[in-house]
Image (cartoon, rainbow, N blue to C red; front, side):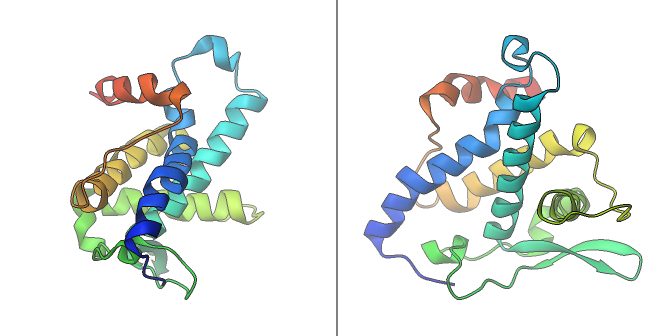
Length: 176
């Protein structure tokens, strides 16, 4: 894991994280936009796949990953590689699995499902992940963790591509 300089941190917030948050939220923000989707075709599938990949990236960025222990699925610490950028790269402690509280099982299910469904071609892998049931809630949990443990302590706010700025600001109200 690499520690970023203050200049690199700023660039990461304003360029890299903005792009990745936009990819993460593109699917969620546009769920109710029927003119954009026109069914579950190519744009729907591409947006879900990209958003899913970013959700996995952010779960690991925060410091956790899924692991099977016997027949149970749980969160364990993510062991970053030398060139990985994680929350610790910003001088902030990574989150322990316990930090996800009541949502730990959800995040483990989502991480495992995305890992099996988007990065590996698998068949009947036995994962419990159902995107229509788990995805939006998992995104909300991860955004809350990113905001409270990274953005807020370092004095930043979420910024997205202008196409999503308006939709994102309304998105949390749609969850309630």
